[in-house]
Length: 368
Ligand code: FAD
Image 1 (tube, helix red, strand yellow):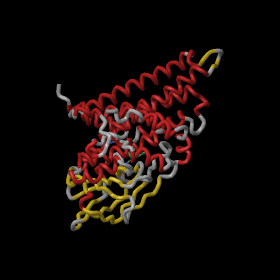
Image 2: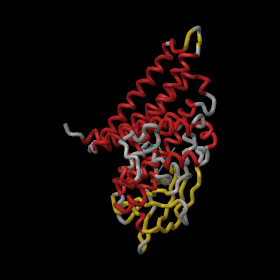
Image 3: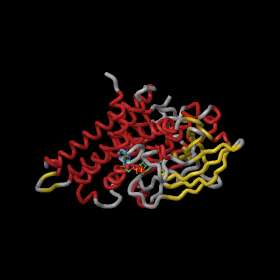
Image 4: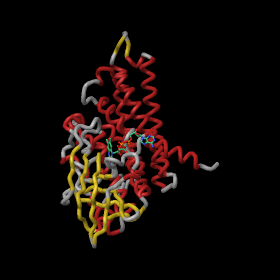
């Protein structure tokens, strides 16, 4: 049987072509590009084949995510949201909900996941969105912010309070009471469709509720574990794109009578970039191995991978700008985009500081 992602890179190359900078400038990925990828199951390739997906491993999907991330971080961000929606549905949904939603996610519909609120950023325990049962329906009320891909989404997985615990609820973007307001000109990942989502008495069937009654932070951790590995692999892609661009420029550009690469201080930047790319790759491979084997270390490994990869990507992109000099100072240059995109990776899916707090708790809890 052919490997499901065998021709996926060529497919992505054809689809993106040289348009990533144009999408970034316009703040928009064309609908046909997103739908084409979504309908082939490539935005959430780990959905099991029994549910209509490609059923690939985290390791294989991770390498593919890095490839997409090396070409276009906005598209990779959309992929992360779609995969996180699918994973959350898989983990929290019952068999009927799997049958209802997973084939749609693997077959062309687009999804976003909404946790953050105006007063609940790093501290998601401050979330105030409610999902209230009302007969055989539920009513969703609240305000979400910065939801990646919400601008494109057919369905938004909204996390909120449900009784004394929490739930996720599948909200069709077209449902009465839903407003999606695009975040104007984000500093990075500009075409990832970030939007604020208003939920004004949105009435839905009770069957749209996933995992009702779970502790809020357990539900958040479940969903974010996927998001963190995906972002981490995306950062590997950023590092690879930056290393390629810096290497090529340092070989071809001459100053003081020799290629930049032969100036040792430039060489140091290249060495640091290579080191960062290798460290991030190894952390991601470890996290994906834990994921694929169902290891109890999976949650911590995903935090570690995200933390290390995001920091390396931000540092690596800055180093690449330094190597390219004014060549990277043009808006839309791959390295200029990487620099803006990478910084945001240190803020999302648990900022650098929040990941450090999680890792510090873990370090304290380890018994020799
Ligand atoms: P704050 O929580 O206000 O934090 C500000 C700073 O204080 C940060 O540096 C933080 O690390 C630090 N800080 C906060 N608390 C502590 C502490 N206890 N100790 C040390 N330092 C601390 N949300 C979604 O729900 N879905 C999405 O798809 C999504 N996509 C996003 C995409 C982008 C590009 C961005 C920028 C945001 C996105 N978000 C999304 C929101 C994102 O999850 C939050 O921005 C993030 O959780 C940080 O919250 P905040 O921005 O409110 O910062």
